[in-house]
Length: 111
Image 1 (cartoon, rainbow, N blue to C red):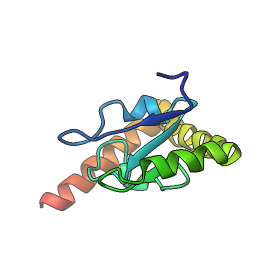
Image 2: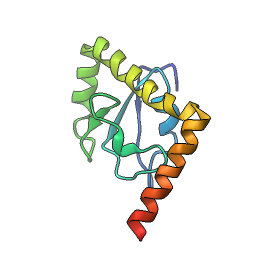
Image 3: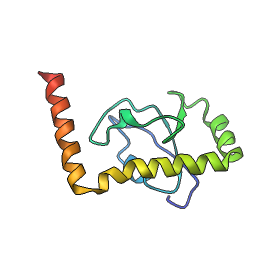
């Protein structure tokens, strides 16, 4: 899958379980705006910066595909931004801080 320019991310019961490696690949991720928020902090992913946003029913997939084929430079930037976003998770010290932040936010919401 990593050899493709574009990868489709589709949520299941919560998130796409392969979203991490897709964002960390050299491919451009096409997906709807994330509905769930996990340790990956999906709410911080910005459409057009980290991924190509699709409508909830995927009715604009072909249109976005044509756009991506016509804008290779912009697609390289989106892919690079996604990899940069994912790089924050490769630092163990920072990862522990993120885990603390996620737990803190969770307990705020339930409490």
